[in-house]
Length: 362
Image 1 (spheres, one colour):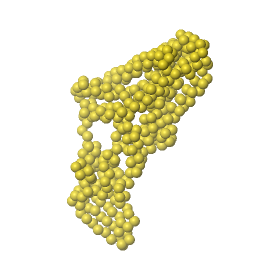
Image 2 (tube, helix red, strand yellow; image 1 turned 45 degrees about the horizontal axis):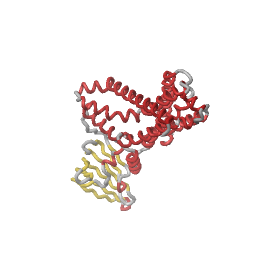
Image 3 (cartoon, one colour; image 1 turned 90 degrees about the vertical axis):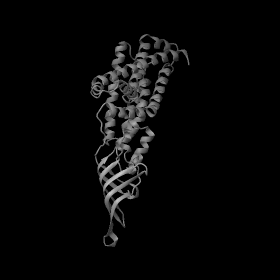
Image 4 (tube, helix red, strand yellow; image 1 turned 90 degrees about the horizontal axis):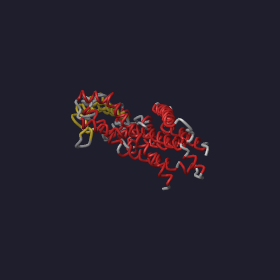
């Protein structure tokens, strides 16, 4: 590593760490004063649990809320902008140092930050999101569980379709289950008063109902069997049937992809969630793109100092957020392909950064 790389690298890292710390503390303070403080006081939440909550919130602040990407943008604009205003960049360029050589260290730092964001999102992010959900349920609300909404599962094993009119997702037990299977030679219908998941046997059980079979090719002959308790005629486990009810933030990208492919086999709409899958990769890449944008803008900061750099950072951040959430929203509505919905903002700003960098006077 050359002297120039160490010099610029240290300044960028120092500004980056300070900015990330300031952004994280700002979000934590605002969240505590506007939301958590009231809930914690109402439900007498221990301070240790409040501390754990905000510790787990840090990965989301830095990477899900784009704080790390905005911090690298600010660090690049302030550090390189100061080098331009102090004539350090001019002296380096006049001494035969190319622009690409000058910006090597800041770009390397941004690339490493993008990799760190991806690794953190895959390793610590899901566990932190799960802990936050548990803390919200246990310490910041009067969560009682027992969601009684109905459930419907199509394309089950053996061609079965199941509808449960009242289902408790916590107990994995439901009332008034209706199952049917439309075959060429046989039509089957099951009506059961109760369906539940036996955790020891790892199977669904039906209780108190009837099983009707109709034979269209035999003058609609039928047979009726009364049910006391029998195994359900499908073998899908709850983790398959309810996998998409868990937030994508609580899963790694490969895990989410597996869930989505399995859900598609069950006939569950997944288009919007494929957008969330691609967003898991698009967010970390933004860290590198923001530094790519910061470089040409900083080289044009002839005056204004920190105020101009911060103002420009805010303008770029607002522009990116508007494009990002607009395209992601269109993806969730099915108006854009999932990959393009997640990556359009990055592609646009990457192209803008490359064009500005190419046109930067040296």
